[in-house]
Image 1 (spheres, helix red, strand yellow):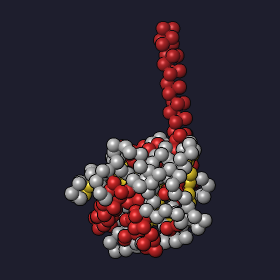
Image 2 (tube, rainbow, N blue to C red):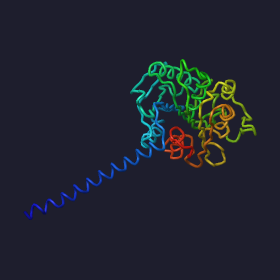
Image 3 (cartoon, helix red, strand yellow):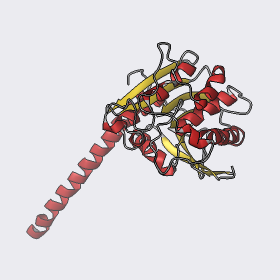
Image 4 (cartoon, rainbow, N blue to C red):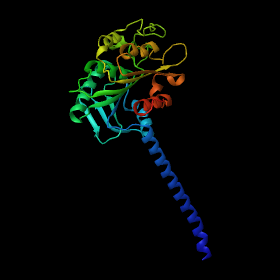
Length: 307
């Protein structure tokens, strides 16, 4: 009997500890679920992520992971587009999903933002027709941000063919030029090579917000600016390395902030959000960037206006 008690006591201690830990974990999960319900909205509106130049599925993944780890949203679908424009869907998108996330990957990741926007037209029309998506949020980094802007200027609010834009988080968009860093991944053939036409501190915004130097890619957006969906809410995130270049190393602050002159007075809400320091480097803005992740999650899904 003494031997039995000797073995039972440690076992009971372990079991009680496990029960306590499991109970504590359940309490934490309930508290977390309660907090999310009270502070974040839930809907079937999908949020669609688009990468930039030379990007792939990994480019968006860290921002998507941040949203999933916060328990606010869930990745449910991936969409790939072949170089010839064939769209392939992987996963499911239903009206029962809460804050679903969709990732878009262009297999030709050097086609440029205009071609990306044309592919977005096909994707969004397919989501409207096949999955009955009537509204969406957009997230884009770099050329993905430009592609979303150009796409929305092309389609406006054509609700018969395309879903309606609710919110957009646009990160490091090259609306009026890209800094020519003479890197090997820059295009060398016309017309894409003409997009790398900016230099640090070469441009500036005038008092009314209009850039002093108008590059061709900005002129394209400017001509169509009145078509941007008026009901949209837009968060424009840009980087400032604070190293004298007034840029994120690839996109100058005037280029990124020139978006405001196009749409800020036309949309329901427009905000600029500046990230400073080493983590404001162009690629780091979408790679485990706490400030960007927090701003993105709060802007898209938080109930209050507190950021």
